[in-house]
Structure formats: structure tokens, C-alpha cells
Length: 506
View 1 (cartoon, rainbow, N blue to C red):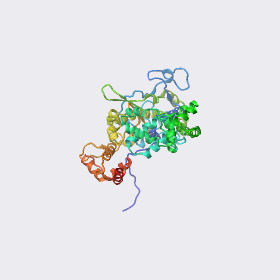
View 2 (cartoon, helix red, strand yellow):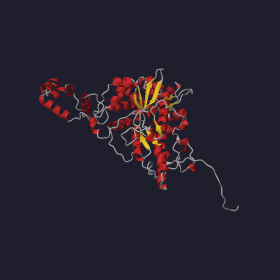
View 3 (cartoon, one colour):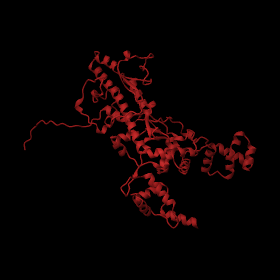
View 4 (cartoon, rainbow, N blue to C red):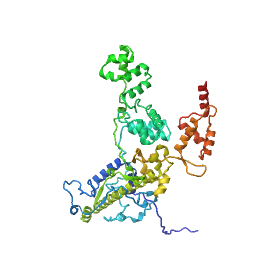
């Protein structure tokens, strides 16, 4: 076979990760605070972007001008106004980059000002002012001190694997103020979450065992009590002292001697011990930057008995593209370098407007589907969370799983039961032996706990026996899964439980 040079033509499609596409992916997973900071940076760097700080029906102002700008002064503009919370979009218009085919041969040099479809997405090079060519992640140069909430969340995730406790614990951590106190009552928390009060009390007791000691207390007396118990100094005399600690603030030493039935010297020693405690333990973690969590989505009851899903328009930036300014600059005489810069900046401005719109619509789609899937949670409470994964939501709204994953990261939903991160609504599932609807892992854990709590000393259930019982009830589960769930519930083995029952009977 002779070897000879020849020419071949082949046509193919491939996904090209342009700088704009990479930025769009990052834009989708930013929180609303990070998004506001990013947009502010783009407004400073891009001469064709302007901020509209007025209402949708009101006049807009151009940056750097005190007087009201008229249409004659500013010319036509493209505006993204995402205050219409009920707007929807076709799934193909969403930022689902995994299914987009980009033809690298379509790059051009001119950017039309009036049509997104004519934007040259591949024309912006790394030299553009809006897109740095470095691989540095957004916020990579920022540093912060760990907050009290982060410190407690880390301990919560280590202390328990129970999904009910994790959900209740996350809510309680959000309620703890910077001093370390829980100002809401446990009854109110249970009512808002639709959870059982014993579960809330158990989770609160778990949080009060975390560092710093005293965190999660509901008042000063409980805070000091927790610290004294940890130091093994909470005897009956100290208990009487704490119960009457208001006398210490009044300087009533004789009253403390009377109520504690201790000598004056002992009371003075107790005063010294109490003064050495930390009345506001949360302040040890108060040096970091505090950022309020603003919800991205509001869930409200509608008049027809369903749920209304709305975007939080207060957190959505409104950006304008000044096309007249671009027309003036692009027609002026300039060298090739300046023309390239103008084209890139105008393309970047149009991209930002389109991407902001796509981001908002995608969040609305994902949130709406979550509400549809988890309707029982909003009606009945935390124990009625359905098994849900990213694929179910992605298939329902015709997007890729990775897109849904990015949307649920750092996005929050304000509901009648409280503020929750979108990812909290995704729970694992256990298959059914009858081929019916799957069971949530949370419900199965609760069922295992109920079976074990109903044991007697003559009928202690082994893990194999629990598997048989669950399979008879239509739950397909393996023995190792039962053992794992039992361990996450801090329940000892059947041998240990039987030994403990026999010892208690003696």
C-alpha cells in the first residue's frame, strides 16, 4: 500500500467553552450577594452597561448624571427587568450548556446591536476588559473568619446523620444570634417546621452540647448552667445560686446566702466562679463578616389552595445596554485594536443581560418543580419530605442534572415554614418490593427507630429480623443499610440492647 499525502474534509460539532460560556456557568451558581458584586464590577468595567435603579415604569438614570435621562439622550436600550416573578421560559432558552453545540467556525468580527442571535460569542478573547484570562475563581482573593453558624453546622454534620435532626438543627442554627442565644421558643419552631416537639427538643439538646459551651441557650441562666455542668460544678447549692442570680446584679449578698443556704464565704466563691464564665459564648466567633441571607424565591399560598412561586425582585439586578453609545463609538475612526475592544465590550454587555435573564428563569423553573414535588412538606411538615434527586427535577424541566445542581447551590427559598436552602429538599430513596412508589430514606430511618423502641427483653430485633419486617411491609433494603441507618440513629446493636435490658431488669 503506497503512502501519499492527500486532503480530506470532515464536518463535526463540538462544545467550545468560550470565556463567556465559562462565566455564564459561574454566574448560575453565584448567590444573590455574589451576583450583585459581580454585576457591580461589570458596571465599572464595561462602558456600554448602565444600572436602572428606578421602578420598571419609572424613569431611568444614567450613571454619573444627576439629571433624569430622556430617550433622546440615551437612545434605544436593551433592558433585563426580572421583576415579573411569574415569567417562564422555554427549557431550551435556559443555561443548559451541556446540550448546546457551538460551531467554532461561526466567529465573526461585527456585533449587531439589536439581536442576541447575531452576537459573536466566540469573539471575546482573554484580553477583553470584562473577562480575565486567568483561572482564578470568583472570590479567590477573599478571606474571612469562620462564623458561629459555620462552626455549629460543622459540628451538627459530624454529630448526627438523622435527616430530621439535620433539617431541624440547620433551622435552629439559623435562629441563634451572634451572642449564641436561641431567642425563639422550641414550641414555635416545632409549629413552623411541622415537626414533633420531642424531635425539636432532642435536636436543641444536641446543639447545646457543641462548642462553645453555652451556645443555643434560651437565657442567661441556661447558658451559665450548661457551662457549670460541663465543669462538673452544678451541685444543688450552685443551682440555687443560678436560679436567684438576679440578686447578684442587685448586689444582694445576704439574699444569696439565704436562698443558697451557704456561708457568705462559699457564696463569694460561687460569685467568683460565675464571673469567670462566658455569658455570651457566641461572641468568640463574632469577628467574621456577617452576611444576611436574602431569599431568592418566595413561596406563598395561592387562593386556589396551591402554591405561588415568585422570584425576589429585590435581589435581581436591572441592567441596561446603551446601543446608541455603541453606534457612536463603532462608527468613529479608530485603529483595529480599539475596534476589537469596542466589539468585545458590547458583546459582553449583551451577554450579561441575556445571562441574567436566563439565570432568573432557570431558578424559577427549578424552584417551581421542587415545590410541586415536595407539596406534602409545605402542607404537613418535615416528616413528609418525598425522596427526590437531581435527575427527577432535571427530567421534569428538561435540563441537565449539573444545571440543577448549580441552581440549588447557595439559593434560598422563603416558605411559610421558614427559610431553606434549595438543596435541603433533595433526599435519598429506598425502593419498594412491590414496584410501587419509593420510600424516602428519612421515613425508613424513622420506621427502624419505631421498631426498636417497641422491643421487649424477649423480642429484641436483630438487623436481619428488621430487614425481614421491612420487606414484608414493601421496603426493599439490605442488611448493611439497616446497620448503617441504625448507627446514624446512635442505636446500639441487638446484642448490646439485649444486655442493657437484662441489666435493667436485674
